[in-house]
Image (cartoon, rainbow, N blue to C red; front, side, top):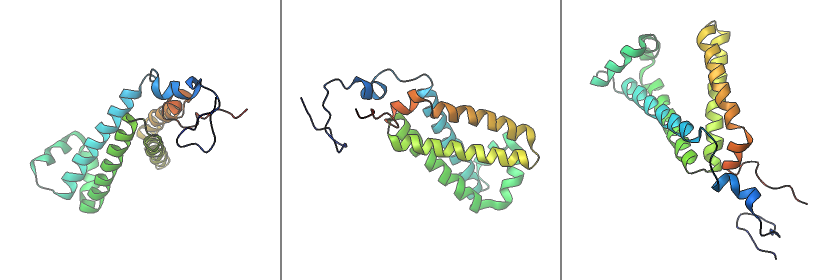
Length: 165
């Protein structure tokens, strides 16, 4: 029995759709919730950093006591860098939303953000900050390999299309 499936240009001839739907509707892989929370946490931190750089002199400036080195490097750049942090916050929030809704674009955006983080950590390592850069590459690399694992990709319908017979 043939039936048309929305979003596909060909008809599906089998009634057994479990191979394509299990990841999207079944039990999610471990770490899915943690990754989504991580994205929203990052969005919150980027929002805080961006706000304090765009609007200096508020009570929020006290949060920089946690990372005085970063503040010393970022404060002179002020609004320009603050605006980039606000843009990063929006991207992370969008990725988190797409992640929790299991949208393919949310997966792609998350992969792009983590890949960018890996590149930044590599640059830090090559510029001499071996400890931070190296640790960052290891952590972001682990997240990247988690993101591209088949169970996670299948949960988002990325690369989960069945092979035509």
